[in-house]
Image 1 (cartoon, helix red, strand yellow):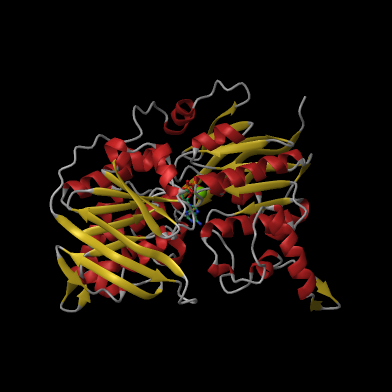
Image 2 (image 1 turned 90 degrees about the vertical axis):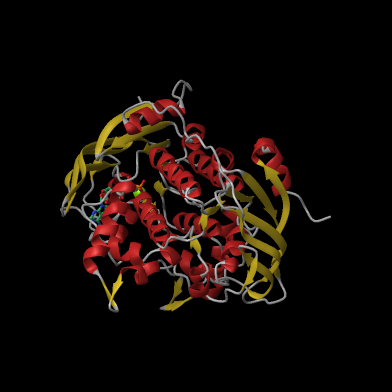
Length: 509
Ligand SMILES: Nc1ncnc2c1ncn2[C@@H]1O[C@H](COP(=O)(O)OP(=O)(O)OP(=O)(O)O)[C@@H](O)[C@H]1O
Ligand SMILES: [Mg+2]
């Protein structure tokens, strides 16, 4: 019989007002890849934080048995010493430190009390190669994209003596190519005998890589399924997660498309530090009222940079080109200008630009449009609460109240707060950058429904997504971006994953 490396028994974890976990059991076989699935707020991250000592022994009920003996981890270092390493859902690299410094943070390569920089950088370069990242270890973490940051996190985990690696939604921020790379890496680790627990909302990935899956719902274990014989379908996993069958992943869409709202002409953007390096190259695109337009591209194609440069030049330097709003040229040199012109940008990187995590839900929702709540120069707190309450209900944000601190919400629910915030600012053009990143299948459907509703109200919506099926499921038209250039504009009736991929990988002639 296969030996268990981990048994969690009757784990119960309570936060003020929330029972996050109740009597949860989890058995993980040594050397396997074990997936954990469940809707946003089901308790997946909390369970892994209990396991890794983020929530120390004594703050939860139940037992953890790791490698045959009871583990009572006092903190993360304690669990790491035992060989349990967690990579969190929200990446945690220090932006101003170099990649090498991040890898060895708290685990410095020292020689007689001094940090040995040579060794640090050499070792870091080796680890980076192991995760397939061709990167100079001295670059600062903030200068590499979220996708690469994820790989750096794994390199960091490998620098420790890891026996059980926990990955909380590792591919949420990655495109298909990088996800495939990362999943290949996990398979490689399995061959080396490292056990992995992986949390993901991407059920196709789980079926591809995991040996078994445990499903949580509302803080309880529903079941553990073996994925070896291939009989467990995605639909089967969804049924476990939501407790019922889901008929379709995308809501029906009957577009009613009006006049052009935003046009971007000959838009060229240079790198913020290297002002001669072209990031967006003479891009032309437009979006009409009631239309949902997709932007597809591989990581590094410049999708986010394009969006942010349009949004009040919040990215880039030396920007040229023209923005037209309802046919008239506009200048939007700051985020404030862009918002005044009715442009909103909901970011892929919630932590960095989207939310104030130490503030509560209502303040985050009202943040971009406080003026709408002003009464004689003061924010009308009562109305703020009512408005936020409406969004909490309509977006189905799982939280005890609108005064809950955003940083304590599950990742998917944080994303719903970001969307609520921009919906409340009532823009004419809404640019959504990876709007369903880290969001469960049920909530995705809700967000697609919201996008439909916004378009139905006459808003122009631009959706940037790494998931081609998603763009194909919700858009009216799709632009492809490759190396900063728009390589094609494809009407939805003609769009296929193969065609889009062809244009997404098109090199400059
Ligand atoms: N520090 C905290 N304080 C209060 N409540 C919390 C805290 N951390 C988590 N919760 C609550 O516990 C529940 C489970 O959250 P958790 O983050 O484990 O969900 P999840 O399954 O990881 O969801 P997601 O897929 O969205 O990441 C949620 O209702 C969440 O709001
Ligand atoms: Mg989570």
